[in-house]
Image 1 (tube, rainbow, N blue to C red):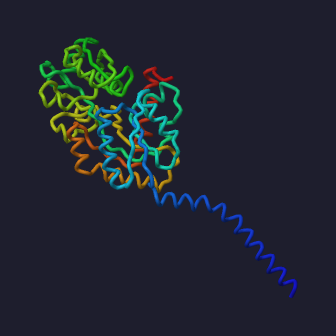
Image 2 (cartoon, rainbow, N blue to C red; image 1 turned 90 degrees about the horizontal axis):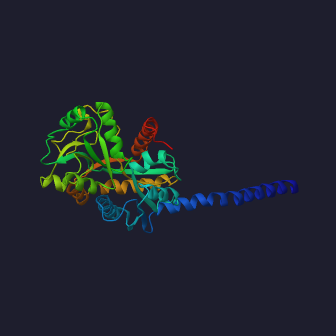
Length: 332
């Protein structure tokens, strides 16, 4: 009997010891589950890599305002401009992966600068993509009195007059430049690039007659006012906002890589359930009438991709530009 009691006592002690070891190990998981369940319970910081007041900034604020309704917490915009979007991107990647710091992701920071400069983040591995919500207004425009009535006229002139056609872009090596460079290579023509610090400056130069063609972000207001003419949308397919303007696929440029990215991402490691809550809130927000109207007024297109689809899209384009920039001799 004494021996049986000793065995029972030993068994009880073993069970208690096992519980004592298991409970601390389970506690972090239980705490994380509880934290996930009540997310968000405080304001969310949204890092925007462009200056306040620009079109993208205004639209981002409108989008976040709509998402706040579903999340039940304020979304505070923190502008971190500079470095061709890389300063903001680096801040997002370095933030705590708890869902309380997210931000805007754009093509330059994902596909171009990582191959030109040494950066603190990997554009594919260091972000958790949440949603893509739009596409900027990239296109080829001319002055209303230009002799170029369509994009074929531009190509024909460039072919007959090598390097005489001046076209303005944003940045020396930006997405606009790389898109136009691909088109020039396909057509076997030469353009003379005139770089500017931003889309508005490109348009000022165009209106002033200092450049022949603008291949950059354009102003819908100038088109509606009859001051400029849109010849080509620098995107794969036509936009509902410009039904009579051809896109790249319409003119046989289906192979041109033109990654239109206006997205939202957080750092790698955000719990899946929190990421799903964020994705659901912003997906709902892009379908709200106020946001749709804001996009339309700005001449932008709503372009939705889920978090997974965004990740796949970014990985594919990242691989393309790694190869393309190397071919151009532009990689670090």
